Amino acid sequence: MYFRKALEEIKPYVPGKSIEEIQREFKINNIVKLASNENPYDCSKAVIQCLSDVKSIASYPDNNCSKLRKVLSEKYNIKEAQLIVGGGSVEIISMIGQIFVDPDDEVITCTPSFSSYYSSTKLMDGKLIEVPLKDDAFDLEGIISKITDRTKLIYISNPNNPTGTIITADEQSDFLKKVPKNIAVILDEAYYEFVTDKLYPNSINFLNEFDNIIILRTFSKAYGLAGLRVGYGIASEEIVEQLNKVRNPFNVSILAQDAACTALLDMEFLKMVINNNAQVLNYMYGQLDKLGISYIVSQANFIMINCRRNGRLVSHELLEKGFIVRPGFPLMDDYIRVSIGTMEQMKEFIVVLDRMINGGIK
Image 1 (cartoon, rainbow, N blue to C red):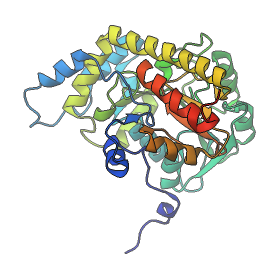
Image 2: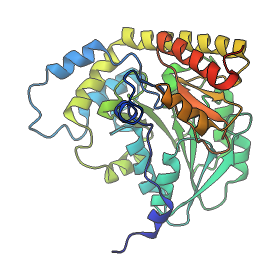
Image 3: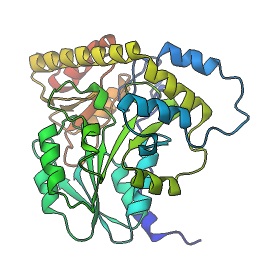
């Protein structure tokens, strides 16, 4: 059997272990999953009601996600033709690779960042150019220095996954002015709802000046719809037209479309999630400071913690205590990424982490 050579450099995505896996492996009943940046407050009750009201799923969904695109266009005051909806923003990243990347073309991003940038590039026989983070954030000047006549795409994760750092509106504007207009810049804003820094860009405002940008957002995080897989992209009509050429038919289910529309209307739930995340994140800062454990200040719903020893070992020890976290990021071997759970969950977690790192002495 012959397979494409590009697949030799692609590894299947490995998510954080499920709660069921840990229960079986370690014979533990109470598991706290802090590995996948999911919403610890579930989703809006209105969404649950919406899903229970669905009468039939025997027909195919609306292929164009018309209702959802209409709601999003009104929310952002943009044209419906500027929107594309996918099975999570990951599907749109795959589409982007398909419409831009030819064999040996170059795609630039920073590392560590979201792994799908790598896989979508390699799948198209492209070459991913990775620039190390600078001060735990995207090195925009470093990216500019790597641009060649083979560069087709640039990925900016803002806030960056896994560090939670941002680039500001001024930094983004200066950067986009330096990037040749024939290079597409993907602004991956999967965690933008959680940002509290007032210097963070409103990327929608950049669309009129820069027609080479694609903004990616998702319902998986702040809205708590990870299990339904729905995300969206915002770009010029020209780019969206090309993306639709490679989009799979009926790619977003009836349930996902209805749930996303309903979630957008429940602002009280969204505010609760955002406020609680900020409160618990600040609690974590205070506790980590008190315990002498270093971390990276985050603008997302997760935090990178320096374990002062191999993060994979600490992660395994935490598994034995019922906490699932994420280790193993390039150039950050001593770190673990910890999703921000509820206050109760994080109070339990910090006690266990203190014992792991400090021996519970401090």
